Image (cartoon, rainbow, N blue to C red):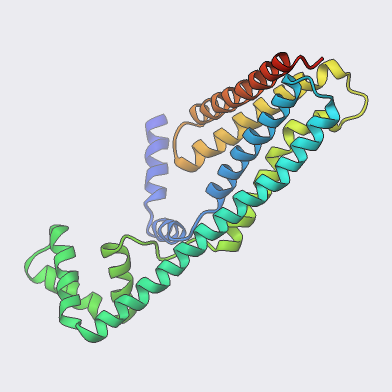
Length: 252
């Protein structure tokens, strides 16, 4: 029964319409990766600040101030960096397209030979190879796209810089806010605030790691545990440094 169900799923996934839809979607940039990385970094850095403040014996207000400042400043910095990286990739694609178009205009036979060599290395030969070359070079856009992807290895649809930066920033703020939430809740016993922060942050780490596993097509459990481990190490280091400095300088 299970094998029959699995076979049915595979057949459905390989229906011409499903294949066409999947190939078209894979050409578009997914901003889930930007959000996942932003969320992980936001949670790690904010909780590290909180853990360091608690380890140093600072009052909750200090943890809130430092955590909030880090959340906004580091979130903006990471989003700006991702924006610049995406913009650079976009500009690189524009330059590559102009470069290939100029070569096609100036040395078309050389560019045809490049297409021929590319597909010969893929195993094509004879009339089949020549048919591929003629088909590709008959369409200028297809010709340029082929050179960009096959020769230069660039994506045809890079990330939109503003969307990439925004996805990073929003995820950084949303997930990075989790460690601070218990400090912002009035009426929570002071002795339980950091414990609540640890529990909520651990759940956030695992959830974001699971999303990363799903995005990468790997085990969600493994992704969640790996991210949780990274966050625990970062928080442990921050807490330990705070406690060590507190003892060194005799802060009460």
